[in-house]
View 1: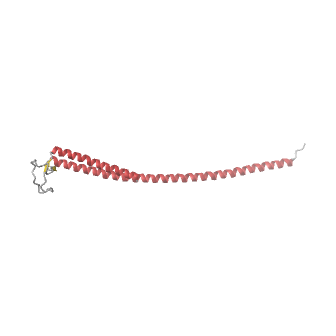
View 2: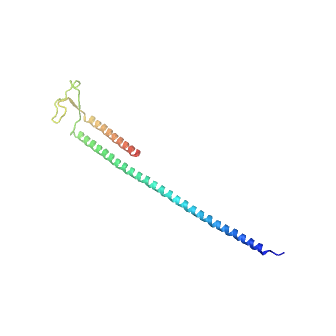
View 3: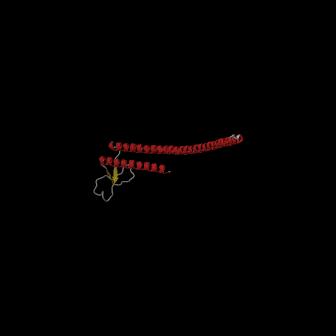
Length: 167
């Protein structure tokens, strides 16, 4: 039996055609996949840049907040040291008898009291009845006011801190 060479030739051409079609499809899909990979890489880069921008903005806001809080802390620290210095000066003046604390007495309750009624030249009470406090009691009063002043300054610092955070 003779092999029909025409049939073999046609069959070879069909196989070559299928092979080249397969190669073309493979090339076309490869280009589509490459284009899709490029687009995905661009989208990823855009997302990364957007995230970096947001992160930088948050970092800048945090840095600004830290600077404001630091300035506020320095202000309150200065107030605290000023109050401490004033209290120390007042305690020293009380201890050296340079300053004496006195209280204004009610005229009715002071009727039996032997406290002099004459006011000094710098007095603002104009001959009101006054009683001098014991230096130890005066020191305790100063200590109490010192603690109160420190508490108020600390409260102001806390309120300023919360206000800065809530902005």
